[in-house]
Image (cartoon, rainbow, N blue to C red; front, side, top):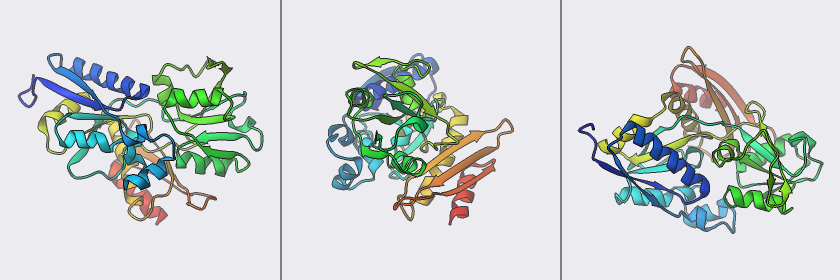
Length: 313
């Protein structure tokens, strides 16, 4: 084992089914890369997990943080206290601006970046009747859905993936929106029509060029203490560089944009064979209506983010 590394490490994770699956994937990757490493896991409840009775925006307001920070704050407290060495996140849940004490040091290979409509009837988004009730906790999904289908009724939906599927199956909604990556990681098969909680549900992934994903969607990200050589070396040993290039561009665009506002943003990237990165973005106004759009390509992810930000300025 490298002299930079200790012989043990502790990873921190939320306790949801999806978070535990992602923690297990991280542990497998670390065990393959560092066979002699002793691993332990710390399961930490975040305020976002505890307060599922109100919207994320209300939880964030009460906590004095950004919406996405409600899923990371307690993990960062554990990092700062050296209770854990690596915090494992769904990267789309991590604010683009984090304290200087921490850094996002890497990611595993990315899964699908698409959103998925899960509905009680066949046909996907276009087949939903006018006035159909669609549940989501994501402002980005809600704004984009209202832009594409202004005739739908969009209401807030909280809870982990199984909880949301149960609420749909029980008839509280006509459809819900979830990340395809999370569904696949939990074992749901997009090609099948499963019978869940007593109801038949239909899974329809939405093409990323039609329904823009969130920055970092589909990526399992690793947050460490800035300047910690041991954790940095561990993450470097399992980091997927193509994915890291893509998510750096996506997160940098949001970081630049959120310097002046907190508007919902859809973004997706593609890494070409020649190493050039392409990126397309949609920035939705708070009051609704048509988004501002931009697209471009560049070899440097941070420069690409800057170019698209300036194109919208």
